[in-house]
Every structure is written in structure tokens, then in C-alpha cells.
Image (cartoon, rainbow, N blue to C red):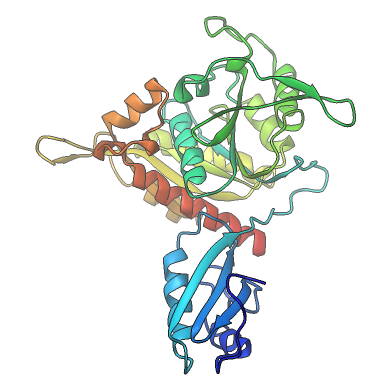
Length: 361
């Protein structure tokens, strides 16, 4: 039926669809009707209601689409009010045929860095939670086996429970925190003990974390990759069914040089680059409001221009970002000014938009 009973008033469904066919999807192109984004048109007297099915619940231009769709329908004679609801269906991007998809997971996002110390894990954790806040079903895999940090960043302890699926295969149930599903080697080993494994063992473990964990259903699985471009990172990039990679850098030259190496690694194994996130971009003194470019400036902009990929956002240095990671409460759930929660959310929306564009290209 839809949201309301269909009436016999002067306004018709054909008129509504004709009006909405003039509204363009601002990122993918094409109109809302031809893209089959309009669902359940219902009319009661002069009240017109319908659902717009987005390509991601984290759509950054949702308000623009709402405004343009409402304005278009209000041009129809006899319309007195317009009701719009949103749903979303996240479309998976086709991967490399020989890489098996993860059951029930639409998209896998690798968050990587050319070197350690740029806050990659902090960015991965906050972006995963931000996607969940936007309504996306999200998981996070801590693939930094030699330095797992997600148990601390999410304040989660304990071992995942196991069960056998219908094929008799052993499966793990991911732990949950802040609206996302979590898996980390840190849940399985004593935090005081180092993980002393060779590359093939790490790769085997991470494949189990992908295919022997009950992830489904997920719109996005975020993978916090090992830092650098060594054997483990390269093997993972080559063997995982990645939708794309997100590169984290800081503004200074030494970090941006290593970013180019990481990007080239992903290019060689045919993993698309979603974009760049510049972390620790600057510091704003809370007492004076003065901005300090502690690690220089412009590194992310230069890389984006040089490599032809978007700079998705710049995250300032903030005490609340650091304390959130130490206390198990990611900054994006905080309302402190120096947690920069809206910055993380804006970047998450841009990532979701880029993935939608890639899926429909």
C-alpha cells in the first residue's frame, strides 16, 4: 500500500513521477525516476507522500535531494503538502573475480597509511562509528595484528563466541560496541604478549577474520590495515576483496612521501583509491583560538592534486580525539568542540558517496 491510502483527487501518480523525473541525483547523475529511486508514491487529496531510496544511508546530499524533490512536487496544481521518507540500499562494487566476496558484506574499505604514527587507527575507528551513526550497518576488522589497538579504542574485552554454520564450518560472532561489529587479534591473545608470527600466518588469520566471522549483514566493513607497504600489507591488499582504499596522512613532507608508496601499492594490485584523509592537520589553542600548523600544511592538498584523487577532509589535533581513543569512547560520539565529531561524520559521508559513485560507474 505505502504510507497513505491512494485517493481519487486531482493529483495523479503520473504527475508526481513526471515532476520528480526533473530532479537529478547530484552525484551519480540521471534523474530520480529513471534511477528507480522513487518508491511507494501515495496520494490523499492534496497530500503527496513517497520514499526516496538512496544508494547509501550516509548520503552527504540528502537535504539537497529532499529540497529539490519537494519543490518539484509542489509545482503540481492541487498539491497542498509533501511527505518524504528515505531508505537506502547499498550496492556492492564488483571486485576482482578471483577474490571471493565476504558473505553478506556489500563493501570492504581498507584504511591504510604509508607509515606509522599518522593516527590511522584513530581515523578508522571514528569513521566506522560515524558510518554507523548515519544509519549504515558497519563492521571493523583490526588487521594490524602486530599492534592491535581497537580493543582499547572501543573499551571492549572478552573473546568472541563460536558456533557452527549450516555447513558445519566454525564461525565467530563479532563483539559489538558503539553500533558496530568488531574483530581483533587483541580479543584472542593476552594484551601484554607480543604476536610473533610470520607473514603467511598473519594472512591466514586475517582470512579467517573475513570469512569465518558472522559479519552479515553489513553495508561497510572497515579494515584497519597494518602500517607501511611491507609484505603483510601488500599480501592483504592483493588478496582481500576490497572495494577501495582510504589513505591517511599528516601534512608534513616525510608522511606524504610514504603515502605515495602506499598508493602505488594499491594501484599495482588494482584496488581503487577512494581518497585521502589528512590527520593532525592543525591545532587550535582552546584559550586563544589561535591556529598552529604544527606539522606544516598543504600536504594533503598537494597529494590530491598530484594523484588526481579527492582530499576527503582534514582532521585537526584535539585533546578529546586522543582521550576518546584511550578511554574506549571514540571522539565521534563526543560533543566536545575539540573532538571534531562533525569533521569525522562529514568525511564518512564523503567516503560513502565515493563508494556509491564507484558502484554505479
